Length: 165
Length: 339
Image (cartoon, rainbow over all chains, first blue to last red; front, top):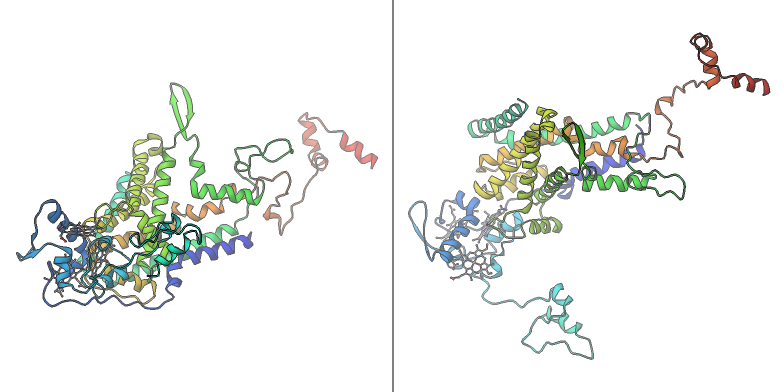
């Protein structure tokens, strides 16, 4: 083989990259998530829900918000109240033991919960001082006179404390 | 004809999966055995090709250049077009692999009347960039299904790709881009008579195969959804070497997996090896330093050739030269006398 000082490292790098997922997980078996299911039946069949629930949610959103239609008739004729918090979450009370189980596994983070409030968390958490806020020196809690104190600390300290509430 | 053959091959694969999974219920074969076999073929096949290339001697230094080579200090040297050192070779190679520099040139040749005109045309470059980069990003994004917990950068890539939150599940930008790129690359072969003339079935087949792969994937994400949780159970089984086949995944998933398996297994034996071949091209991976560094032909390693000086050669063929009336270099004989 010619240029083996370059070719062999090249081949090793190639094999490492191609097998990356195998050594990343180093052979430990991962079990599928087991979301806790309520008794009875869902809006549609279980198989349909597992594959299509996000599209159903989209449909619901359009029905409720754009068409003002709050009742959904499922394929077998039963009727359901359309709503994320007042629909899905009325049966699936526990978001962490249900939605999150699968979503963690599949690595999806639906942004719905930016606005909609899952049932178990009735309180608003305190906002964290994100890096962006820190960068622009925006105090996290505008209500408490958390304006940066001019003079002594130059404001940095105040914002950092914001994250510790 | 070439087009039809390639298209039939790809449609045949869909029918095969439909028979195998839909009718005969061979889930393990199509979900585990074929993907593993394809992956091994890919890995072993490409390593074999690389070793094979590395074993082939390069008798001459045949760097392709299109710029001023390094010569006298006051003549400006084109570092990228005529690399003189390994570092410059690396730069040129990196730009070629990442930015397809050689496609960003005057690629157009048209006959106007009886004159041939060359001109700038960046469409091929654009189509190739769209296609290759999207394919690469899509591939990396799929690691979401092959790792748990999913590494942050892959999550981030997913977020960036679905940045506009169009629809639910969100539309990936790379899905649009790869369709655009592929459509262009296919139309180019079909519409442009010059390219059409030199296109074989082996050019259309990978195109249709990748089209099938992309379309089955997009159908699966946006239209005929499958249960991604079960899909990830299967893919994680593959990648942790504890294969299992969950029930209830739609047929279209198996079509998708079969397409990628065929693509990957076909890779080492087809024009697709240009992925690694580019690094082994003597026209690209050698510096243009012919005038400073002597390139020893590897053929000579064991059997050094016998060289003849001009005078020795003239001596050998003197009769023939004289009878043909060729001039004889008298200096050869003078020098001999002097020394």
